[in-house]
Length: 404
Length: 232
Image 1: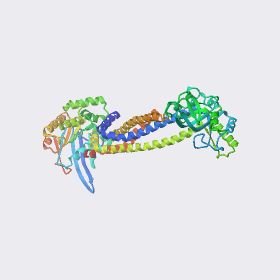
Image 2: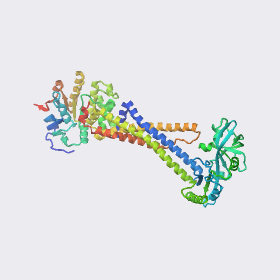
Image 3: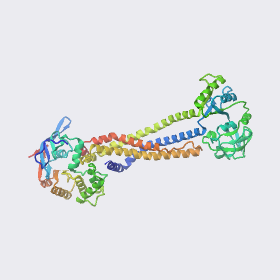
Image 4: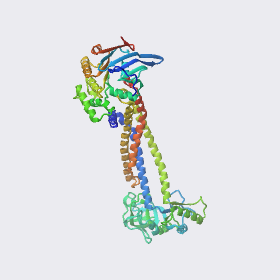
């Protein structure tokens, strides 16, 4: 019987094609917005989680407490030094630790000049990320500590539009007035900060900028059987002591990769929640649209309802027919919305790929999002139809038949 | 379903016992039907006549279980419908009564065939059986060649014939027609009346509400209504 009611309902929607479409627009705009935001958000989150996985879950980062990127602290009392590094190295649970120096400077190539972040790394630092592949050199080779005046460039120098003429192996670039030979090009990492940067040896960078003792960021690899959280607490305590700082007033920040990920995910969840919430408002409006259409439909078809009752339709039959009809409005609207939403997300992914040159925005094709959106739109449709359907089903046959 | 007061005459299919139907119109009470008693036997061809406003449509609604009486009892096949719930009334209407309306009241989105199949959906009859029966009925009313036409593609006479086929769908004992020829020219009207006569010969009880004297003359029993009462 339900199958027959579906046919009846579908027939009625087809009869009022224009109105059915207009009603469904309300739903599919909402669903499209929700689906595209969710799938882009999910994609972004997946990407970030992947990045953290590459980084490794057993890392701890120590940086100066500045708002800018690491390396922007200038005050002597703020910066981290080799003394801090040795304190860290002597902490229980630390397998290995190395510092990274990070400075922006003027870089010239051919006739152009750019301000570029230059990373000073040494073999120790690179070994921390060994086998993780995130500093992979795809052309040429990586730096060793003996490679004075040699540089490895981020992927965008060679394969994006930082320079009019892309940098190639064996080209010469000038960093802060000093010429460097390019011996390697890194693979694409995905975030513009790393892909736009240059790497030279730490000692060379120190000499070049006349830095005596500074570490922009210290990366710690935790022993296999130690808990990163506990090690981080120990580190904090020891660093406070050696730097002579009180608890709560530290000038440094210690974070585990896990914490960074959690913080990020939390912020992300809030942002996404707000966006999806706004999109959901349009769904509410869409639902009211369905309700309005159904009420109009009940009025228009009052006589028809009377006839159906006269030929044997029970109240529950009429109720079902109208509920299926409104549910179908929601479901079909939702299905179109899902298709449009995914197209939008894919479009955004494509455009972001062109303009950002990074796979940061990726539409996730999560079947749960799609199924969830379809279910949700069907429920919205049905709920919006409840009141009109009850009204229709309760009409007295004699009154309904007399209605003009 | 509760049976009350068994009717002694087994041939009696419809009985109205001191039935009144009053409406409230502001402070005023309108007595659309006032203390009417009618008895209709199986196989009767009954005409209910009277000027407009005489209450004949109200009687028809009461007989067809579309409306409930304010006072009195209505028996349909020995069942007192005054005590039934709406869904039970719907079942009774669907099974025992075939309705035919002046304005045909076909569902505009459904084809002739689907319109005839509709009452059978509500009785849970399988699709295959519904289709067979609907085809058979449409052929019987001479519309075997218009199965897939929508109501607006049919003439008035054809629409009323579809409506007759629909009324017969669940093989009811009683056919209840409210001014069935009111919207038709006399030739088409006569065809429809002939159809009723044939149905009556097949054993159906026919009740026609009309103000057309020519139709009334062909009935075996006539009830004249005036101001909500039966005129003797």
